[in-house]
Image (tube, rainbow over all chains, first blue to last red):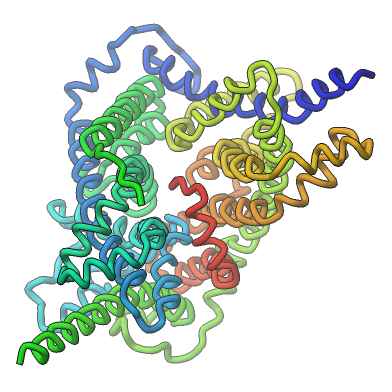
Amino acid sequence: MSRKRSRNIFIATCITPAIMLFALFMVVPTFEVFRMSLYNWGGLSGNKTFIGFNNFKVLWNDMRFIQSFQNSVLLIVLVAVLTIVVAIFFASVLTKEKVFATNFFRIVFYIPNILSVVIIAGIFSAVYNPRTGLLNSILGLLNLEQLQRQWLGNQDIVIYSLAGALVWQAIGYYMVMYMSGMASIPESYYEAASLEGAGKFKQFSAITLPLIWNNLRTTLTFYIISTINLSFLLVTAMTGGGPDGSTEVFLSYMYSQAYSNSTYGYGMAIGVVVFTFSFVLAAVVSRITKREVLEF
Amino acid sequence: MKETKRINTDTLYKVFIYVALITLAITIIIPVAWVFMASIKENQEFYGNPWALPQGIHFENFREAFVEAGMGDYFLNSIIVTSLALVFLLVLALPAAYVLSRFEFVGSKFINGFIKAGLFINVSYITVPIFLMLLGWDQSLRQIFDSGFFLNNLSVLALIYAVTALPFTIFLLSSYFETLPSDFEEAANIDGAGYFRTMFSIMLPMAKPSIIIVILFNFLLFWNEYILALTLIPGDKKTLPVGLLNLLAADRAAVNYGPMYAGMVIVMLPTLILYIIVQKRLTQGMTVGGVKG
């Protein structure tokens, strides 16, 4: 057997199983999402008729979809802004300041990221419980009874309660990301700036922020993708979209239409819209935040 | 005069930093610790002050969760699915990543791009099509054997977990294999080792640090996953997170809090223990090629 032939056999043996299975369980279902969105496909009987873009037309006037759209966009913006501010603050504190027990804080802050979404749903159900919840009882102890709320029962604030849980979950992860960016900035830059009389805030805005800008840009895409995904998982586990649709998000609405309601075609049309939206949003955000990369 | 003012703002800033750090640490530690505390409380204790310490150690909650709520069986199912999925993943991803990163052949560029595109496919979107596909296969099987195979099957679930983790894992392993010098393969070639021998006894052992990171990440991913498990296992062979989901809903309705918190402890304790043992590797490995799910 020639060397060339044995090389080809080796290559084929190594990559064929992975590629076949990847195509079967990831690529085919992805195409299915797009194909099914063009069908009226309902029930387990598998009746399907081609209806073109009709599902999308219905979607356009579906008030529950529009509400889920608003909720998702609100969550993406809130979670991204809050997490960026908090995570960058703690990342710069833990890398730049001589803090006692740095490691302890780093380890603790990352804990929420290793917990299952179901656990986070359980924890926050306990925190937000109106009667015996941790949050309301702390507010009671601090004599702030007027701030006590039905955190998960009040339609006007439940979406912010969800945002709180998502930020709680995300801080540690992004903090570690930003820390790795900051750790590679040479200490001498800060020393020079300090000699020039630049204060901490000036140092941050003139050195740290520009030098981690690319790092920060990458995470913006992560915020979009992961908030869409995690808000779905959290909503499904915690509120089921309630009360009265006030926490319905993109994919939770898709899942309830496609799986629970068995209107697969309609559900997949939602999937197509969400997928396109997140892709376009990520591209736009990445475009408008583009700056020249600074070398150091 | 100016000097003292400077010191004052510095001290104030330091105090502010510590207050912030400690506040965040508390908001993370307290709820998690509270769940542990609640898991040994008796039911009537939940009507009082939530901050009261448990009156005794009520291990009955764990027995109820394990036996009556079936968390014991689900625990076993989760161990089976997670370990099988890790085995499938390594068997599929290691050779593929090795070949894709170190061999040039017709279509190698295309295949690399193809797999990288998979990084953008989110499992939440394709859960329903996967379910329908398996359902279709089961329906055809039923016409011949009168029993399905693909749904309600822990091994199939494990295989799908492994496949959905392929793009990220191949990406991570490839970026490691690319850094190795080609001297090793040349030396092995001169010594007369074939391709398979070179891969198994020389290249794969060197990738051990990356393999450990792959196992850690995917263990957490597989152990915590619930939407595929919920959809593809409609029967009673549930995994832990799905079991916990039912426990959360059922116990809230029946106002039986103790076993619910015991269930939460059962699900998160393994991940917490693992995390504490390996936390350094995990947070370092994340920066190698972090993609958030």
